[in-house]
Length: 512
Image (cartoon, rainbow, N blue to C red; front, side):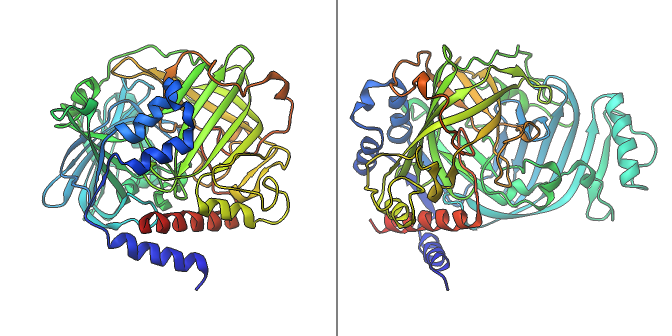
């Protein structure tokens, strides 16, 4: 048995032996970790203060196994790869059955419904995930998948399309506002495959509880379900390794969420029609930070802080990586900077704006012993000076063309997708493209994303807090950083090393 396999086995046994409920709350150790991560100037920056509050101030309880019984709804118009625009309304019952409504639309504001899928089945929660820490694995079994079209045009188009691929199941032209069977246990046919339909999102769940603004009377419950493969044809075979945008409990939701109330009152014959709103022009300026601890495929947890300088179209990114799903235990940080193009309206994704991002500079800081050891064992100067890494000491890796140990290479250019909107509290949110599920990079225009990651929130309209953006750097070597906002899998060796480092960090954190 190899070292990685042994570590995974030990980690699994140790994690499975934990309690049934995890409480990630404030603690002196986490405050010291954050001070170490962000530096002593933390209090001087509103943006870094928001990140500090994210870790120390946001009191989040992760319930394991998740208590999913109840009615859960989308908080906004969601965008899936394709693109597909939809809202969701899922009900889970005490007898382990569920009924899910997926409302689809032709527009990016979810104001023009096209059809609705009604999915019924049974859900069985399994064990805590040994790969995605903080998540719970589950199995589901479908009983029925039905469809209701909301316009005559859509009904005609879909019935013709399904009749070609699912001959015999579709009898005659469909009519709007009539429910039709796509799949059933007794029917002997499955017309849902033509739509690349799958409910694999139910294979990975995570439930969070928090009290907004520390108000014990304002409980918000959020349910995260597994992510959707960025290639629609692969959805039937994909096992989730990250999460979609959270659903909120209809009884315990953010009181400012008007969308939640609209979706809660809807059904397959009365789809939710969200209030029309104008598309906001994407202005890349000022500073933006994560709203929560974000999850990436291959066991990566991080928070982000972006700074855009619109006067010379340069940008900076701070990426704080952690070994745990609430970002308490830092492993390493990345600082990168480069240039971005002027935005053009997307011709593929309504409401989206296309950008081209380049990176020309990067610095790495290992934040724990495991990551430091990992960097020091690599031979050759392919990630800073060989054998010179120290915990908490930053190194510039631009001259070594990135950092092979972290799967980051120079040079690189990426084709990005952005959109901007305001939330229920009037804050500006910035979305950028979802990373390809296969771990590749959007290094060509045709690989540009058609859906989005978790949004960042604007923390400052000014970009003057950083000293690191300099116009004389923009023609330097480009960083192969497969996410101007995240990370990819890279080679098989990188997967094994990164996973091994994560598990070692997990074991060390559990022993401390």
